[in-house]
Image (cartoon, rainbow, N blue to C red; front, side, top):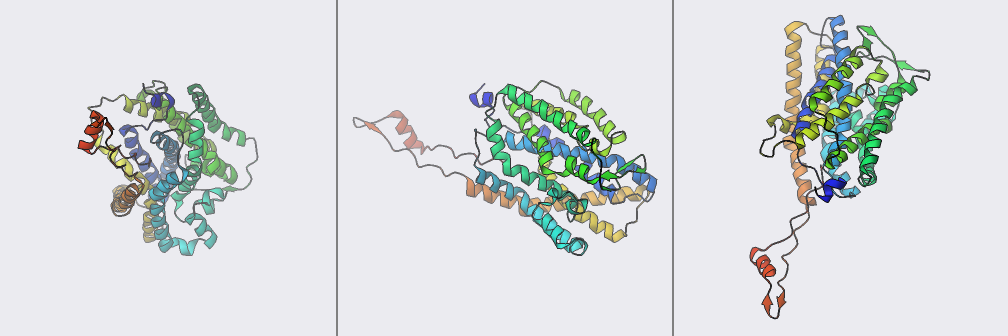
Amino acid sequence: MSTAQVTGTGRGGNLPGLALARLPASFFILTSHVVGVGLFADQALQSHVYGALSKIGYTSVSFFIVLSGFVLTWTSRGTSLDWRRFMSRRVVKVIPVHLIAWVICLALFAATTFPLGTILANLFLVQAWVPDHTVYFAVNNPAWTLSVEICFYLVFPLLYGLLVTRSTRTLRTLTVLLTAAVVALPFVLSLFPDGATFRSPGMNYHGRPEAISEWKFWLVYICPAARMAESVLGMLIALLLKRGAWPRIPRWAALVVLAPEIYVATEHAHFVFATSAVTITGIVLLIGAVGAGDLRRAPERAAPALSRFGRFTFGVYMYQWPLLWMWYLHRSGEGYSGVEALIVYAGVVALTVVATYLSYQLVEKPLDQRWRRKNASPRPAPAPATFTGGTRTPAAATAARAGAAVPAEPVHPR
């Protein structure tokens, strides 16, 4: 095993299983939003279906937050990162899509629906710091998670430098402690009074509406500082995998843990617990198990073809809301029944996928390629020939014939 593998400082290879896992998670979120806007005319059915899907959506959001820390760490190398280069990469990856979705929302409904301060908070991605659902869920609703991610990006190089040199024992201890902290947070909050409450269509139990404490919901689900614990968990999983120190837990075993957790979160847990506390253990185990399974794959086996579509999940997440509002305003809030509801659902999904694909091909991919060209390290000139007593050394002669040069430094992780 190389020194980089032992210390967890090497750059990891492709993990197609995790790329593939992003697809169902992204469509769980999309489906919960489609139903949440009011897909079914039958109100009892609407309430039951959305009550279940909204919590699966919460689990999927938690999965992506942990995965974000994992991917950034997995694709990093060395013991320190250049903060400016790292942030420029992040800006190119996420800000163009955010701006496009924000402009569409502004043109369709947000300009006449929300006050200027709320619109600007969404534009500058600071809305998640405001403990008010009329702010953090405003304009492009899903963008609140991008507000959380930007906060994590700002401190990631510092966190990476602190964690990558820690001992394996320390990393394992931190993994257990942070998981326990995520689980414990809602239990601690339950000791305090709720204060102001609010309602949402998804906040119900078997059709019964349930009011949620504003500040408690914000703290466990929205607040960037609180959600950062999950991102750091992803970092720890990646470092342990790089060192070959992640426990050999098969994927089916991780699913055996996660499945009942999702059931409890969906059917029995209060929303403050269901957002991430109930399912975080299964999510951590699943990401680690899938990543470890990818590493054990035979080199000659091809990556699953569907894993290539993992690159589109960000666009699916960001473009769904303006499309949902176009549909909502057109139908005046009326739901559908039977096959009609399924057709409408399929249409919304198809339009979201098309918008995502066009955005990737016309905006994201060209900007990404431009960043790579601009930030690729130039190749040094061929080494000059050296002579000993008027005779060129064999190594120098070989370099001169081939025009050999040191390979360009790999582009910084995405």
